Length: 477
Image 1 (cartoon, one colour):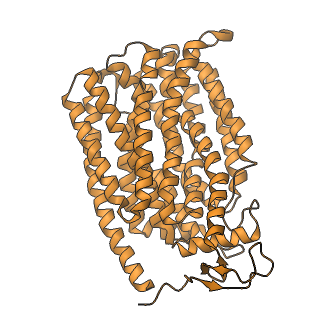
Image 2: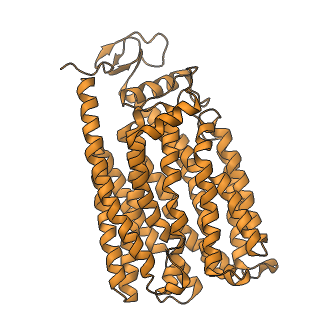
Image 3: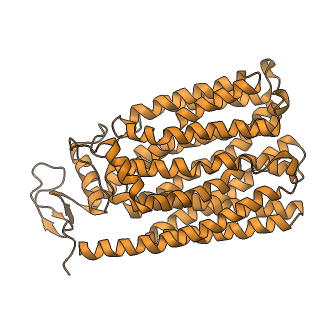
Protein backbone atom coordinates (compact mmCIF):
# COMPACT_ATOMS: atom_id res chain seq x y z
CA UNK A 1 0.00 0.00 0.00
CA UNK A 2 1.13 3.58 -0.58
CA UNK A 3 1.58 6.18 2.12
CA UNK A 4 -1.30 8.58 3.00
CA UNK A 5 -1.76 11.18 0.21
CA UNK A 6 -1.34 14.31 2.33
CA UNK A 7 1.84 13.43 4.18
CA UNK A 8 5.18 14.43 2.61
CA UNK A 9 8.45 14.07 4.46
CA UNK A 10 11.74 15.89 3.67
CA UNK A 11 10.19 17.94 0.89
CA UNK A 12 12.19 20.96 -0.40
CA UNK A 13 10.08 24.08 -1.08
CA UNK A 14 10.64 27.75 -1.73
CA UNK A 15 9.12 29.61 1.24
CA UNK A 16 9.21 33.04 -0.56
CA UNK A 17 9.61 35.52 2.22
CA UNK A 18 8.43 33.40 5.14
CA UNK A 19 10.31 33.59 8.41
CA UNK A 20 12.02 30.29 7.67
CA UNK A 21 15.04 30.08 5.40
CA UNK A 22 14.60 29.72 1.66
CA UNK A 23 14.67 26.13 0.40
CA UNK A 24 14.37 24.92 3.98
CA UNK A 25 13.97 21.18 4.37
CA UNK A 26 10.24 20.97 5.17
CA UNK A 27 8.95 17.91 7.01
CA UNK A 28 5.17 18.07 6.42
CA UNK A 29 2.93 19.24 3.58
CA UNK A 30 -0.86 19.03 3.44
CA UNK A 31 -3.26 20.59 0.96
CA UNK A 32 -0.65 22.94 -0.50
CA UNK A 33 0.54 24.17 2.92
CA UNK A 34 3.96 23.07 4.16
CA UNK A 35 5.58 23.60 7.55
CA UNK A 36 8.29 22.29 9.84
CA UNK A 37 7.72 20.35 13.05
CA UNK A 38 9.24 23.31 14.92
CA UNK A 39 6.60 25.62 13.45
CA UNK A 40 3.86 23.20 14.47
CA UNK A 41 5.18 22.96 18.03
CA UNK A 42 5.35 26.73 18.28
CA UNK A 43 1.79 27.04 16.94
CA UNK A 44 0.52 24.34 19.31
CA UNK A 45 2.08 26.16 22.28
CA UNK A 46 0.38 29.36 21.19
CA UNK A 47 -2.98 27.62 20.81
CA UNK A 48 -2.59 26.16 24.29
CA UNK A 49 -1.71 29.55 25.81
CA UNK A 50 -4.53 31.37 24.01
CA UNK A 51 -7.23 28.78 24.67
CA UNK A 52 -6.56 26.51 27.65
CA UNK A 53 -5.91 28.92 30.59
CA UNK A 54 -8.90 31.20 29.92
CA UNK A 55 -11.11 28.23 29.06
CA UNK A 56 -10.06 26.53 32.31
CA UNK A 57 -10.84 29.62 34.37
CA UNK A 58 -14.20 30.15 32.65
CA UNK A 59 -15.22 26.54 33.27
CA UNK A 60 -14.02 26.71 36.87
CA UNK A 61 -16.41 29.58 37.56
CA UNK A 62 -19.16 28.03 35.45
CA UNK A 63 -19.09 24.89 37.54
CA UNK A 64 -18.94 26.87 40.78
CA UNK A 65 -21.99 28.87 39.74
CA UNK A 66 -24.06 25.78 39.02
CA UNK A 67 -22.98 23.77 42.10
CA UNK A 68 -22.70 26.46 44.79
CA UNK A 69 -26.34 25.86 45.58
CA UNK A 70 -25.23 22.67 47.37
CA UNK A 71 -22.83 24.63 49.56
CA UNK A 72 -25.45 27.32 50.16
CA UNK A 73 -27.96 24.67 51.20
CA UNK A 74 -25.87 23.29 54.07
CA UNK A 75 -24.82 26.85 55.03
CA UNK A 76 -28.36 27.81 55.98
CA UNK A 77 -30.20 28.60 52.75
CA UNK A 78 -32.59 25.69 53.17
CA UNK A 79 -33.67 26.86 56.64
CA UNK A 80 -33.81 30.57 55.72
CA UNK A 81 -36.01 29.93 52.69
CA UNK A 82 -37.96 27.09 54.35
CA UNK A 83 -37.11 24.68 51.53
CA UNK A 84 -38.30 21.10 51.71
CA UNK A 85 -36.11 18.32 50.32
CA UNK A 86 -38.41 18.09 47.28
CA UNK A 87 -38.25 21.85 46.66
CA UNK A 88 -34.44 21.77 46.75
CA UNK A 89 -34.49 18.96 44.18
CA UNK A 90 -36.78 21.04 41.96
CA UNK A 91 -34.29 23.93 42.19
CA UNK A 92 -31.66 21.55 40.81
CA UNK A 93 -33.93 20.11 38.14
CA UNK A 94 -35.18 23.36 36.59
CA UNK A 95 -31.59 24.42 35.89
CA UNK A 96 -30.94 21.27 33.89
CA UNK A 97 -34.23 21.44 31.99
CA UNK A 98 -33.32 24.76 30.37
CA UNK A 99 -29.65 23.78 30.25
CA UNK A 100 -30.48 20.71 28.16
CA UNK A 101 -33.06 22.42 25.93
CA UNK A 102 -30.81 25.32 24.89
CA UNK A 103 -27.51 23.48 24.31
CA UNK A 104 -28.12 22.36 20.71
CA UNK A 105 -29.56 25.72 19.52
CA UNK A 106 -26.59 27.44 21.13
CA UNK A 107 -24.07 25.34 19.19
CA UNK A 108 -25.99 26.07 16.01
CA UNK A 109 -25.28 29.74 16.71
CA UNK A 110 -21.66 29.39 17.81
CA UNK A 111 -20.52 28.16 14.37
CA UNK A 112 -21.89 31.42 12.92
CA UNK A 113 -20.98 33.86 15.71
CA UNK A 114 -17.47 34.58 16.98
CA UNK A 115 -16.92 32.56 20.19
CA UNK A 116 -14.79 35.42 21.54
CA UNK A 117 -17.95 37.58 21.58
CA UNK A 118 -20.69 35.03 22.22
CA UNK A 119 -19.15 33.27 25.22
CA UNK A 120 -18.17 36.40 27.21
CA UNK A 121 -21.69 37.78 26.68
CA UNK A 122 -23.56 34.75 28.00
CA UNK A 123 -21.06 34.40 30.86
CA UNK A 124 -21.65 38.01 31.96
CA UNK A 125 -25.40 37.41 32.05
CA UNK A 126 -25.27 34.22 34.12
CA UNK A 127 -22.75 35.84 36.49
CA UNK A 128 -25.19 38.69 37.07
CA UNK A 129 -28.01 36.21 37.66
CA UNK A 130 -25.85 34.37 40.21
CA UNK A 131 -25.36 37.63 42.08
CA UNK A 132 -29.13 38.14 42.06
CA UNK A 133 -29.59 34.80 43.83
CA UNK A 134 -28.24 36.51 46.96
CA UNK A 135 -31.43 38.56 47.10
CA UNK A 136 -33.96 35.73 46.95
CA UNK A 137 -36.58 35.72 49.68
CA UNK A 138 -38.50 32.56 48.86
CA UNK A 139 -38.53 29.31 46.92
CA UNK A 140 -40.30 30.77 43.85
CA UNK A 141 -37.66 33.45 43.26
CA UNK A 142 -34.90 30.87 43.56
CA UNK A 143 -36.57 28.63 40.97
CA UNK A 144 -36.94 31.49 38.46
CA UNK A 145 -33.30 32.49 38.77
CA UNK A 146 -32.10 28.90 38.42
CA UNK A 147 -34.17 28.58 35.22
CA UNK A 148 -32.47 31.57 33.62
CA UNK A 149 -29.00 30.62 34.81
CA UNK A 150 -29.58 27.32 32.99
CA UNK A 151 -30.60 29.15 29.79
CA UNK A 152 -27.38 31.16 29.61
CA UNK A 153 -24.97 28.52 30.92
CA UNK A 154 -26.33 26.08 28.32
CA UNK A 155 -24.19 27.59 25.59
CA UNK A 156 -20.88 27.37 27.43
CA UNK A 157 -19.91 23.68 27.76
CA UNK A 158 -20.89 22.51 24.23
CA UNK A 159 -19.15 25.53 22.72
CA UNK A 160 -15.95 24.71 24.60
CA UNK A 161 -16.14 21.07 23.49
CA UNK A 162 -16.52 22.22 19.89
CA UNK A 163 -13.63 24.68 20.18
CA UNK A 164 -11.24 22.05 21.55
CA UNK A 165 -12.24 19.43 18.98
CA UNK A 166 -11.78 22.09 16.28
CA UNK A 167 -8.23 23.08 17.28
CA UNK A 168 -6.55 19.80 18.29
CA UNK A 169 -5.73 16.53 16.55
CA UNK A 170 -7.35 13.37 17.86
CA UNK A 171 -4.22 12.23 19.70
CA UNK A 172 -3.86 15.65 21.36
CA UNK A 173 -7.33 15.90 22.83
CA UNK A 174 -7.34 13.74 25.98
CA UNK A 175 -4.78 15.87 27.83
CA UNK A 176 -6.67 19.03 26.91
CA UNK A 177 -10.03 17.58 27.90
CA UNK A 178 -8.38 16.45 31.12
CA UNK A 179 -7.31 20.04 31.79
CA UNK A 180 -10.83 21.19 30.96
CA UNK A 181 -12.48 18.73 33.37
CA UNK A 182 -9.89 19.51 36.05
CA UNK A 183 -11.53 22.92 36.32
CA UNK A 184 -14.78 21.26 37.39
CA UNK A 185 -12.90 19.01 39.79
CA UNK A 186 -10.94 21.83 41.39
CA UNK A 187 -14.02 24.02 41.48
CA UNK A 188 -15.48 21.42 43.82
CA UNK A 189 -12.39 21.61 46.03
CA UNK A 190 -12.13 25.39 45.81
CA UNK A 191 -15.88 25.66 46.15
CA UNK A 192 -15.75 23.76 49.41
CA UNK A 193 -12.87 25.86 50.74
CA UNK A 194 -14.41 29.09 49.50
CA UNK A 195 -17.84 28.18 50.80
CA UNK A 196 -16.39 27.32 54.19
CA UNK A 197 -14.45 30.61 54.33
CA UNK A 198 -17.31 32.80 53.09
CA UNK A 199 -20.21 31.20 54.94
CA UNK A 200 -18.16 30.97 58.13
CA UNK A 201 -16.33 34.30 57.91
CA UNK A 202 -18.89 36.64 56.34
CA UNK A 203 -22.05 35.36 57.96
CA UNK A 204 -23.91 38.42 59.20
CA UNK A 205 -21.62 40.94 57.44
CA UNK A 206 -23.62 43.98 56.27
CA UNK A 207 -26.72 42.15 57.50
CA UNK A 208 -26.44 39.30 54.95
CA UNK A 209 -26.22 35.60 55.72
CA UNK A 210 -23.06 33.77 54.67
CA UNK A 211 -24.77 31.84 51.87
CA UNK A 212 -25.90 35.12 50.27
CA UNK A 213 -22.30 36.37 50.26
CA UNK A 214 -21.35 33.12 48.51
CA UNK A 215 -23.59 33.97 45.55
CA UNK A 216 -22.44 37.61 45.45
CA UNK A 217 -18.71 36.86 45.44
CA UNK A 218 -18.80 33.98 42.99
CA UNK A 219 -21.16 35.83 40.62
CA UNK A 220 -18.94 38.93 40.62
CA UNK A 221 -15.87 36.80 39.88
CA UNK A 222 -17.71 35.28 36.91
CA UNK A 223 -18.48 38.72 35.45
CA UNK A 224 -14.85 39.81 35.86
CA UNK A 225 -13.48 36.73 34.05
CA UNK A 226 -16.12 37.12 31.30
CA UNK A 227 -14.84 40.63 30.56
CA UNK A 228 -11.25 39.37 30.58
CA UNK A 229 -12.05 36.51 28.18
CA UNK A 230 -13.19 38.95 25.48
CA UNK A 231 -9.57 40.06 25.05
CA UNK A 232 -8.02 36.57 25.14
CA UNK A 233 -10.34 33.89 23.75
CA UNK A 234 -9.68 32.72 20.18
CA UNK A 235 -12.24 31.79 17.54
CA UNK A 236 -12.11 28.87 15.08
CA UNK A 237 -8.85 28.00 13.21
CA UNK A 238 -9.84 29.49 9.84
CA UNK A 239 -11.41 32.66 11.24
CA UNK A 240 -9.62 33.77 14.41
CA UNK A 241 -8.22 37.30 14.08
CA UNK A 242 -5.59 36.71 16.76
CA UNK A 243 -3.43 34.51 14.49
CA UNK A 244 -1.57 35.37 11.29
CA UNK A 245 -2.62 34.06 7.85
CA UNK A 246 0.15 31.45 7.91
CA UNK A 247 -0.72 30.30 11.44
CA UNK A 248 -4.36 29.86 10.42
CA UNK A 249 -3.35 27.93 7.29
CA UNK A 250 -1.10 25.59 9.29
CA UNK A 251 -3.77 25.14 11.96
CA UNK A 252 -6.32 24.02 9.35
CA UNK A 253 -3.88 21.84 7.41
CA UNK A 254 -2.52 20.00 10.44
CA UNK A 255 -6.08 19.14 11.50
CA UNK A 256 -6.69 17.68 8.04
CA UNK A 257 -3.51 15.66 8.46
CA UNK A 258 -4.80 14.39 11.82
CA UNK A 259 -8.16 13.31 10.40
CA UNK A 260 -10.15 16.27 11.76
CA UNK A 261 -12.40 18.15 9.33
CA UNK A 262 -11.91 21.92 9.52
CA UNK A 263 -13.85 24.46 7.50
CA UNK A 264 -11.81 26.80 5.33
CA UNK A 265 -12.60 30.49 5.47
CA UNK A 266 -15.39 31.42 3.06
CA UNK A 267 -16.47 27.81 2.48
CA UNK A 268 -20.19 27.13 2.01
CA UNK A 269 -21.94 26.21 5.24
CA UNK A 270 -24.29 23.30 5.72
CA UNK A 271 -27.89 24.12 6.66
CA UNK A 272 -28.96 23.67 10.30
CA UNK A 273 -31.58 21.05 9.35
CA UNK A 274 -29.14 19.03 7.28
CA UNK A 275 -26.46 19.16 9.99
CA UNK A 276 -28.95 18.13 12.69
CA UNK A 277 -30.23 15.24 10.58
CA UNK A 278 -26.73 13.92 9.91
CA UNK A 279 -25.81 14.18 13.59
CA UNK A 280 -28.79 12.21 14.91
CA UNK A 281 -28.52 9.55 12.19
CA UNK A 282 -24.93 8.71 13.12
CA UNK A 283 -24.86 5.65 15.42
CA UNK A 284 -21.83 7.08 17.23
CA UNK A 285 -23.92 10.00 18.47
CA UNK A 286 -26.45 7.64 20.07
CA UNK A 287 -23.71 5.54 21.65
CA UNK A 288 -21.93 8.50 23.20
CA UNK A 289 -25.21 9.94 24.45
CA UNK A 290 -26.03 6.71 26.30
CA UNK A 291 -22.53 6.45 27.72
CA UNK A 292 -22.38 10.06 28.84
CA UNK A 293 -25.82 9.83 30.44
CA UNK A 294 -24.47 7.06 32.66
CA UNK A 295 -21.43 9.09 33.70
CA UNK A 296 -23.31 12.34 34.29
CA UNK A 297 -26.18 10.60 36.05
CA UNK A 298 -23.75 8.91 38.42
CA UNK A 299 -21.86 12.17 38.91
CA UNK A 300 -24.95 13.94 40.24
CA UNK A 301 -23.81 12.85 43.67
CA UNK A 302 -21.35 15.78 43.46
CA UNK A 303 -24.30 18.07 44.20
CA UNK A 304 -24.83 16.12 47.39
CA UNK A 305 -21.21 15.83 48.56
CA UNK A 306 -21.72 18.32 51.43
CA UNK A 307 -24.98 16.57 52.36
CA UNK A 308 -23.46 13.08 52.08
CA UNK A 309 -20.38 14.02 54.10
CA UNK A 310 -22.64 15.67 56.68
CA UNK A 311 -24.67 12.47 56.82
CA UNK A 312 -21.55 10.35 57.19
CA UNK A 313 -20.97 11.79 60.63
CA UNK A 314 -19.37 15.22 60.14
CA UNK A 315 -22.02 17.18 61.96
CA UNK A 316 -20.40 20.62 61.76
CA UNK A 317 -21.55 22.49 58.64
CA UNK A 318 -18.16 24.11 58.05
CA UNK A 319 -16.39 20.77 58.61
CA UNK A 320 -18.72 19.11 56.10
CA UNK A 321 -17.76 21.80 53.55
CA UNK A 322 -14.04 21.24 54.08
CA UNK A 323 -14.28 17.43 54.05
CA UNK A 324 -15.45 17.52 50.42
CA UNK A 325 -11.99 18.80 49.36
CA UNK A 326 -10.13 15.44 49.53
CA UNK A 327 -12.80 13.94 47.27
CA UNK A 328 -11.89 16.38 44.51
CA UNK A 329 -8.15 16.27 45.24
CA UNK A 330 -7.88 12.53 44.59
CA UNK A 331 -10.14 12.86 41.53
CA UNK A 332 -7.85 15.57 40.12
CA UNK A 333 -4.75 13.37 40.37
CA UNK A 334 -6.45 10.33 38.83
CA UNK A 335 -7.94 12.39 36.00
CA UNK A 336 -4.58 14.00 35.16
CA UNK A 337 -2.77 10.66 35.00
CA UNK A 338 -5.54 9.05 32.95
CA UNK A 339 -5.70 11.95 30.46
CA UNK A 340 -1.95 11.81 29.76
CA UNK A 341 -2.04 8.04 29.35
CA UNK A 342 -5.11 8.12 27.08
CA UNK A 343 -3.32 10.28 24.49
CA UNK A 344 -0.60 7.63 24.31
CA UNK A 345 -3.16 4.94 23.48
CA UNK A 346 -5.88 6.96 21.68
CA UNK A 347 -7.42 3.84 20.14
CA UNK A 348 -8.21 2.39 23.56
CA UNK A 349 -10.10 5.26 25.19
CA UNK A 350 -13.28 3.20 25.33
CA UNK A 351 -11.60 0.46 27.35
CA UNK A 352 -10.04 3.01 29.72
CA UNK A 353 -13.49 4.46 30.43
CA UNK A 354 -15.01 1.00 30.90
CA UNK A 355 -12.30 0.09 33.42
CA UNK A 356 -12.82 3.25 35.46
CA UNK A 357 -16.59 2.77 35.46
CA UNK A 358 -16.11 -0.80 36.62
CA UNK A 359 -13.91 0.48 39.45
CA UNK A 360 -16.57 3.02 40.49
CA UNK A 361 -19.23 0.29 40.25
CA UNK A 362 -17.36 -1.82 42.80
CA UNK A 363 -17.00 1.09 45.22
CA UNK A 364 -20.68 2.04 44.81
CA UNK A 365 -21.78 -1.52 45.65
CA UNK A 366 -19.51 -1.52 48.70
CA UNK A 367 -21.02 1.77 49.91
CA UNK A 368 -24.40 0.01 49.93
CA UNK A 369 -23.18 -2.71 52.28
CA UNK A 370 -20.56 -0.92 54.42
CA UNK A 371 -21.96 1.46 57.04
CA UNK A 372 -18.80 2.51 58.87
CA UNK A 373 -18.51 6.29 58.42
CA UNK A 374 -14.75 6.31 57.75
CA UNK A 375 -14.91 3.42 55.29
CA UNK A 376 -17.84 4.96 53.40
CA UNK A 377 -16.01 8.28 53.15
CA UNK A 378 -12.94 6.52 51.68
CA UNK A 379 -15.15 4.67 49.20
CA UNK A 380 -16.83 7.93 48.22
CA UNK A 381 -13.40 9.43 47.48
CA UNK A 382 -12.44 6.47 45.27
CA UNK A 383 -15.79 6.40 43.51
CA UNK A 384 -15.54 10.08 42.62
CA UNK A 385 -12.06 9.55 41.17
CA UNK A 386 -13.37 6.94 38.74
CA UNK A 387 -16.32 9.09 37.68
CA UNK A 388 -14.29 12.25 37.05
CA UNK A 389 -11.59 10.39 35.11
CA UNK A 390 -14.30 8.74 32.99
CA UNK A 391 -15.94 12.11 32.36
CA UNK A 392 -12.78 13.67 30.95
CA UNK A 393 -11.90 10.76 28.67
CA UNK A 394 -15.49 10.29 27.48
CA UNK A 395 -15.54 13.87 26.15
CA UNK A 396 -12.19 13.52 24.38
CA UNK A 397 -13.33 10.14 23.03
CA UNK A 398 -16.45 11.72 21.53
CA UNK A 399 -14.57 14.76 20.22
CA UNK A 400 -11.90 12.61 18.55
CA UNK A 401 -14.42 10.14 17.10
CA UNK A 402 -16.53 12.98 15.66
CA UNK A 403 -13.42 14.53 14.07
CA UNK A 404 -14.34 13.36 10.55
CA UNK A 405 -17.70 15.16 10.71
CA UNK A 406 -18.27 18.56 9.14
CA UNK A 407 -17.91 21.32 11.78
CA UNK A 408 -21.66 22.06 11.82
CA UNK A 409 -22.48 18.37 12.28
CA UNK A 410 -19.76 17.93 14.90
CA UNK A 411 -21.03 20.94 16.83
CA UNK A 412 -24.55 19.53 16.96
CA UNK A 413 -23.37 15.98 17.77
CA UNK A 414 -21.24 17.20 20.68
CA UNK A 415 -24.08 19.41 21.92
CA UNK A 416 -26.47 16.46 21.78
CA UNK A 417 -24.05 14.29 23.78
CA UNK A 418 -23.59 16.99 26.40
CA UNK A 419 -27.26 18.02 26.47
CA UNK A 420 -28.92 14.61 26.54
CA UNK A 421 -26.19 13.31 28.81
CA UNK A 422 -27.12 16.05 31.23
CA UNK A 423 -30.74 14.89 31.17
CA UNK A 424 -29.52 12.36 33.70
CA UNK A 425 -29.03 15.19 36.16
CA UNK A 426 -32.78 15.76 36.20
CA UNK A 427 -33.63 12.42 37.76
CA UNK A 428 -30.27 12.37 39.53
CA UNK A 429 -31.45 15.32 41.61
CA UNK A 430 -33.94 12.98 43.33
CA UNK A 431 -31.51 10.17 44.16
CA UNK A 432 -30.54 11.39 47.63
CA UNK A 433 -33.70 12.50 49.51
CA UNK A 434 -33.25 13.73 53.06
CA UNK A 435 -35.34 10.91 54.55
CA UNK A 436 -32.91 8.33 53.11
CA UNK A 437 -29.95 9.42 55.24
CA UNK A 438 -27.46 8.34 56.43
CA UNK A 439 -27.30 5.19 54.24
CA UNK A 440 -28.70 6.71 51.01
CA UNK A 441 -29.27 3.24 49.58
CA UNK A 442 -31.62 4.49 46.85
CA UNK A 443 -29.01 6.80 45.36
CA UNK A 444 -26.09 4.42 45.46
CA UNK A 445 -28.23 1.52 44.25
CA UNK A 446 -29.41 3.41 41.16
CA UNK A 447 -25.88 4.65 40.47
CA UNK A 448 -24.55 1.08 40.68
CA UNK A 449 -27.06 -0.01 38.03
CA UNK A 450 -26.13 2.90 35.73
CA UNK A 451 -22.43 2.17 36.08
CA UNK A 452 -23.02 -1.44 35.07
CA UNK A 453 -24.77 -0.22 31.91
CA UNK A 454 -21.89 2.18 31.26
CA UNK A 455 -19.31 -0.59 31.32
CA UNK A 456 -21.26 -2.44 28.62
CA UNK A 457 -21.86 0.67 26.48
CA UNK A 458 -18.24 1.81 26.36
CA UNK A 459 -16.97 -1.69 25.70
CA UNK A 460 -19.28 -1.89 22.68
CA UNK A 461 -18.27 1.62 21.56
CA UNK A 462 -14.61 0.61 21.73
CA UNK A 463 -15.19 -2.43 19.53
CA UNK A 464 -17.31 -0.61 16.96
CA UNK A 465 -15.20 2.55 16.66
CA UNK A 466 -12.02 0.48 16.38
CA UNK A 467 -13.62 -1.49 13.55
CA UNK A 468 -14.72 1.73 11.80
CA UNK A 469 -11.29 3.36 12.20
CA UNK A 470 -9.66 0.22 10.84
CA UNK A 471 -11.82 0.29 7.71
CA UNK A 472 -11.21 4.04 7.26
CA UNK A 473 -7.45 3.59 7.49
CA UNK A 474 -7.60 0.63 5.06
CA UNK A 475 -9.32 2.67 2.35
CA UNK A 476 -7.15 5.73 3.06
CA UNK A 477 -4.01 3.60 2.58
